[in-house]
Length: 621
Image (tube, rainbow, N blue to C red; front, top):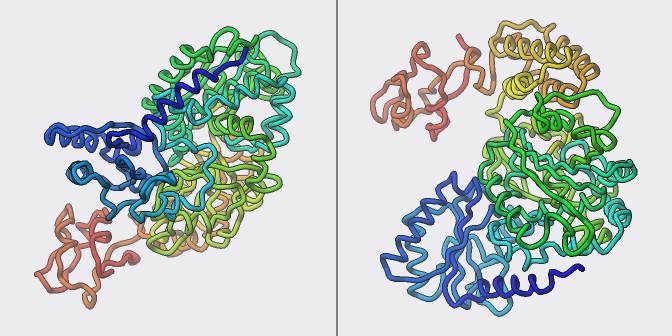
């Protein structure tokens, strides 16, 4: 018999005790981004400050709320006050903020980012809601609703915020009714292709057999992508609840989470959450008193990009080399260990509890007619506000990059969507809606959701070379078009960056790209040329300048430019000479400096240090 009522009531009491605590509550953003920025040291400093001043407070670790560029982030919730958030914390500043707040009985409002989920009966000190922050106010947080707000290692926190209510509803429906709800919602796979989620579920459900598998792909391999990792680190039970719902719908009795070993914090939090599930009757036999039996195991992968392809992923789980196989048969019919298998990614599965809890019609209000719902993205690169975001599908690239991301310091040049397999879209595509069909029409893909923003300091040839070299190294080598073709593409791009290419090489790039796309076995090879083809389409003149003039206008390809100091602009501040590692810059204070191009190693340090734009990129004389 279904019954989480009593357990949820106890969890609500725990949550309310925290929310209305008589002691100050200090929250620390302890996802990987916060830790990398110094959150652990900030927490230790607060612990020391409390001990040194004989003060008391409750300390709570939470996940990433999104604006990674503001990490480390710390929140202070004083009794009777809303939870106030502060960014770019240092140990010294954290100590002072906490001590001053506790001694005065009120948080400092100067330099605060905002208040987090203010309640009507709490003071806010005139601070606006954190979700009015420019990076957060246009977001719609469905999948990320708990990230940054709850302790991901506390089961009660998740349960108190309607955790496992979606599963309870699903278990009161037939599997076919659950699949129909997912169909009505319009949910499409968030792993890249956008295949309707319910379709592969229907196929797998219809295949006879007592043994079926539900696989979660958490092998997030795109450079610059961290959506799945952040979600697991901040709200692991959302994923696990979604896995249970999907498994019940398709009739699976075995679950596998395939996650890269480079995500140690996410792995740790998954193991902790699985233990909590077993303790509360959410795994094993007769889950919640029903005849639904299910187990989950975690498989740590070695970080092979090709294992993002589902059949290669299955081979890796089985202990074989991660290489894709031909289809049919499709995995829903014959997948892991030869059994019917459904493979969904982290975000797809983590969306399910919200759909089941709130209803398919509720979910349909977000997104577009063909791309329903929201999508998480990692917004990185030359954009001012980097981090994790979630917005409705259909929002334009311009809105995401400029309204949410704050634009770029230097003029915008392009954005790479969909990771290495995606496309490089120039400014003419900024008003493109970010949905599956629109991106495909623009020559790119949604991918898992990475958005890498570039400005005029980015070289189109260099970025294409970077992504192509990554794909070439990650190719499993099974099929010749991918194995050999990507190597030839890389060699041509290397010649262009060195100034030894011919103009006819541009035609070779395009023809070779078509051959690789049409002849490769799996999605890795089929999409491999995308970054080259799309950047060549939008920035062909830049490619031609590399070849015809032997010059890299962006100042990136080191053999194709030199730095020059403009004597009529240089103020002699010596900022450039202080950072030059090879002493290539000379000059007296307040006198124009000179740069020895023979000594210069083009490290870019002087270029970035100059505040007067006195150092410029010029062709080699």
